[in-house]
Image (cartoon, rainbow, N blue to C red):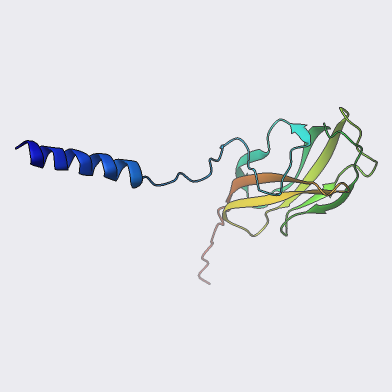
Length: 149
């Protein structure tokens, strides 16, 4: 009786020790981190949920950030996925601990459903800043009128 219990105990111990599955990289719901993204901005959030948006809504969303990089840098490119884009950003060199703003222009007309967009900046020092925007686009109800002449 001792031998079968001993074998069962060892099998359970060995199985739980060596058969562990490695956990995936952790992801915070408040920020999104890509491998090539270095945080040199301080901002309220890197993840923005815009909620429910009417489909005809043309939105300009202004966000603020503080540059905390050690050396001055210039935004050389603002990138995104069409039709949403970063339409305004600082053109001057970014200085440490100074607050700047950028504007995101969203275009929702004729679209429906949820969306997730990543957009951001490439800096002259080779760093990249990435933001994530998500929301749900609600199609306006159209009134169909039937007329019988």
